[in-house]
Length: 540
Image (cartoon, rainbow, N blue to C red; front, side, top):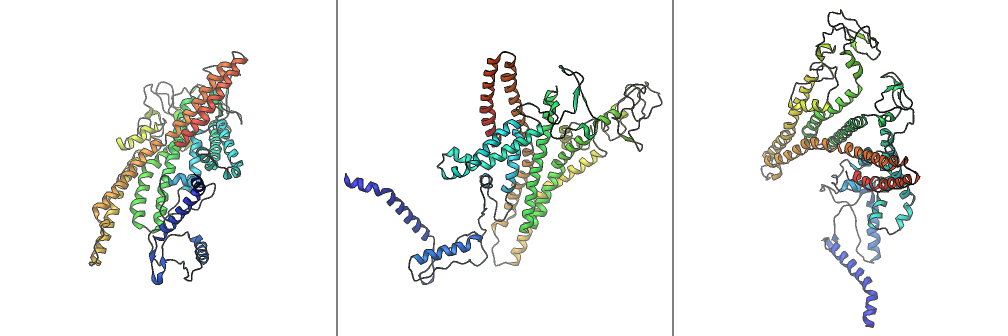
C-alpha cells in the first residue's frame, strides 16, 4: 500500500516524461541519415523567424556537449508549394479563424480575412440594425475589452473563452448595429426625430388616414433628412411596404458588391502569380457574366432611385389648363429642348392637356401621353417592377414593358448575349489551351511520359465544376443575400410587437400593469433580441 502511494505521487510526472521522450523519438524518426553520421531533416520555417530557429538549434545542440556541429540552412530550390501562414494579432485572430473554417488560401494568395474583418460585422449590423439593441451589444464588447488582461490569465470555460476570443468582433458587431440603426432610424422599434422630420401633418394630433405633406420642395436639399430615414415612416400606413422595398434592394446591392469583389480578388491572384490563362479565360468571363446580369441589376436599382418619377408621371397626366395643378413646379421634364415648361394644347380633345402639350382624348394609352418615347406600355413615364424587368431579360429578350431609359431593350439584349458567350468561354477556353500546351510539351519531350493531369477529359471535368459552381453560385448567393432583408425585418417586427403588447397596451391601465409590462418587455427583449437574435444573425 505504501509503495502504491509513493508511486502514485510520481505517476503524472513520469507520464509526461514518457510522452516527451516518445515525441522526441517520433521527430527523430522523421530525419534521414546523412554523411558522417549526421541526421538531416527538412521542414518549413517562417522566413522572419529563420534566424531565431538557427539560434535555437545551435543552443540546443551546444547544451548536449556533442562534438558534431549542427547546421541550419535553406534547401536549394525548386521547392514544393509552401504551407500558408498568416501572422495575426488580437483583433484579426477571430476573423482569421473564422475564414480558416471554410478554407485556407494557397501560399501568397490574397487573404480574405482582411476583408472579412470589415464586411462580417457590417453585414451583421445590416441584419441587426437597431440603435438600442446595438448599443447593448457594443457595451458588452467594451466590457470584454476592459477585462482583457484579466481574462487572458484566467482559466475560462468553453463558452466564456469563445466570447473572450471574439471580443473585438462583438464590439465591431455592436458598433455597426448602432450605425445601421441610425440609417434605419430605429431604436427599440421607435423612430428618433433627431433632425426634424421633413414631413408635417395639418393637424397637430393626426388621426388614421391623415396625409402628411413635404415641408420642402421635391428634389431640393431641404426636403432630405440629413442622415438615415425620416422618422415619419415609422407612423406611415405604408411603413412595412417602404422598409421592405428599401431593405430588399439594399441587401441585393451589398450581396452583389461583395460577390463581385471576391471575383476581382481572383483576378488579382491570377495577375500576381502570372497565370495568363486564368486571367483571360476564367476571370474575364466571370466578370463579363457577373457585370452583364448582376451588376446591371444594381445599376437599375440606383437608376430607379435617382429618377424624378413625380415629374415623369406628371408629364403623362391629363390636366385642365384652368386647374390649380397646372403650372406645378413638380414638372421638370425636358421636351423639345425646354425643361419644366408647361405648354397648352390646341384643345381638340376632351379639354385636358398633358404638361408638354398633348391633347387628351379621354381614352389615351399611357404611351400616347408620355413624351419620352422609350417604348413599352409605359414609354418611360411609369416606374417599373425591377424583379419583372430582370426576369424578362432572360425569359423575354427584347421586351421591356416599363423602360427607364432610351434603348433599354437593345442594351439588355447585348448584355444577355455577353452573358451567354461568357459561359461557354469559361467552360471550354482554358481546357482547350491547356491541352494544346500539353500536346506541344509532349511532342518536344518525346522521352517523357505525359502527365495524366493534362488529359483533356480531366481538365474539362474540373472546368465544368468551376463553371457550374460560379454560375449557380451567383444566382443562389444573390437570393441568399436576401436574408439580410429578412432578418432585419424580423428583428424590427419583433421589437415592434414587444413594445406594443408589453408597454403600450399597459400604459393606459394603471401603474402596476405598466410595471409588469415593463418587466415582460425587458425579459423578452433580453432573451429574444439580445441573445437569440444576436446568435441567429451571427450564424447567418
